[in-house]
View 1 (cartoon, rainbow, N blue to C red):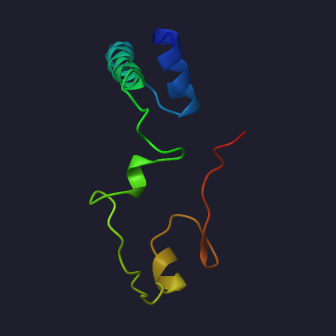
View 2 (cartoon, rainbow, N blue to C red; view 1 turned 180 degrees about the vertical axis):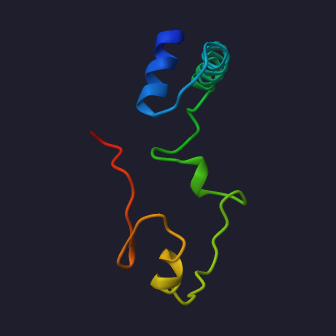
View 3 (tube, rainbow, N blue to C red; view 1 turned 30 degrees about the vertical axis):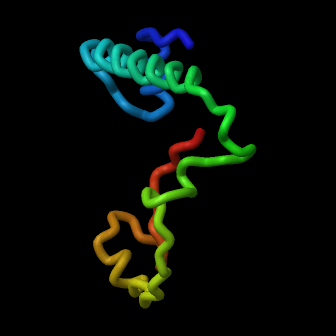
Length: 97
């Protein structure tokens, strides 16, 4: 994937972020480093892994835990400080055009 200034500008537009030219240049370099690292992962041997194996579902990095049932937050309390509450819900600006 070719990461350039236009690519980062497009990502920032889709994210509704305003980046300075300096920030855009910074993120171009950051994204290139990330993608280079991911490419090195593609070269690792994976013949010994079972079909469908996922690193996020095994071992101590993902321990099972009990779900603790807790009472829900009172809707009036939750929306009391909201800038534009709608009953017991939060009204937010539209982000998808």
